[in-house]
Length: 166
Image (cartoon, rainbow, N blue to C red; front, side, top):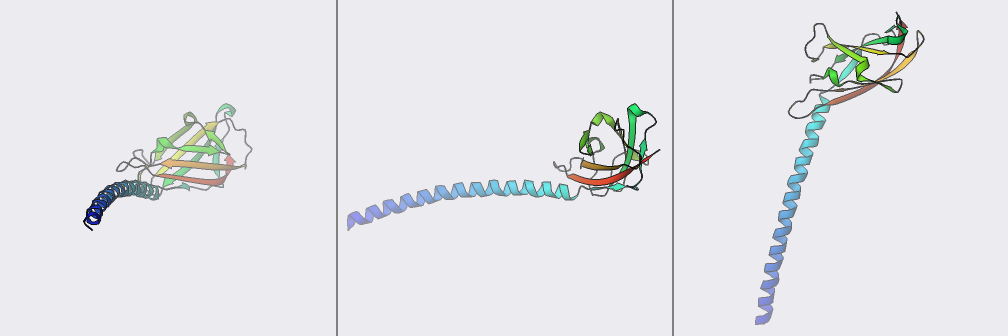
């Protein structure tokens, strides 16, 4: 009987040591998981506070073809989110083809500054598309907010529009 008691205590002590080590690992993993969830929550919050919309008449987009080597399409975007948007971070696709940054110029209306809530952004795209008057085009635009508390929000919208040659 005396031998059984000592071995029981040894097994008990071993079990307690092992369970203590396992619980320490589980607590550390739980901490890592909650940190990752917090990062995802803040990123999702930034995305939810970042939005824009097309402004103006999409069935009457200005299309200037006076210089065939530098045709210009002009659209207007409005910041409808809570975060200020970064007008230099626009990613634009026209009919599925990326418009290079060097072919895009932007102006914040009415008087410059930041592209804050309710502000308009005039976007001029220059290229050689050789599109006909009243052509339907497909636009896809991605915008990114300025960094707020270490996070940037994103919003993407696609639409169809009709060109009106000037």
